[in-house]
Image (cartoon, rainbow, N blue to C red; front, side, top):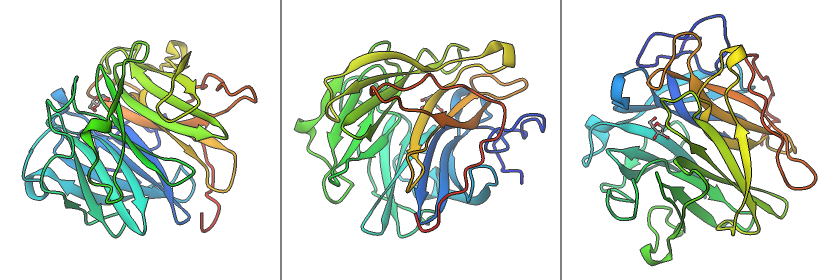
Length: 303
Ligand code: FUB
């Protein structure tokens, strides 16, 4: 199927996960189905005003569930630059974190496909913390503790309150990981925590993902170098702003990220792709091999 990006669909010759211009994907799994929450792309200046959600049984065949947040009608405190969403579930409620005009908001629903109701004010307002308030991500630790991460030029992290819509500002941790630009992401495998992020500018072909490892969700972090980078000989450029997912019930991991759309893409015409992520026994991760082939992984039932 063709999912409506803001611009024209990308070429049939290559398999981006979603047909159309999308970026900043948060890939999730709920109740035996994959969900993708991306930024709508395809206009100069990243001027998107709506968020959509897609779902799939296998990471290849995606259904478009339509707009879940329209800043014009659903959000009182911002009306453009709808970027970089993230989703989390707690006790049967779904919390949708998003960027709008360099603030971070949160909206709640009883379903991963909405409708979502905005909190009514930013969760992180522009200027509250050093750097720019963009690119939220959520990490739920094995003990159920939920953390919010965000930032551009400076990375911030904090434990979310039980309501998932507030936190103690005095408890915010801040870092400057090596070459940190944006898109901080934390995941855990066993006793190792991983912080990954994007370096360079999303309009540059060297936009890419770097990572570090540490003993807690707040580090201290040991830089491990590049995780995903361009493959120019295959036309793959500007591989960044990712999310990482363990396929439920398995030790298989995947990474969703965006790249310049193939062909003719640039920093405002990006597409979402999904590749394998392989953890090594020593706690590091193999550099991701960016592909142009679809990755089909049927989700285990009732995961
Ligand atoms: O999509 C708009 C912005 O571009 C995101 O917030 C950044 O992470 C970069 O991907």
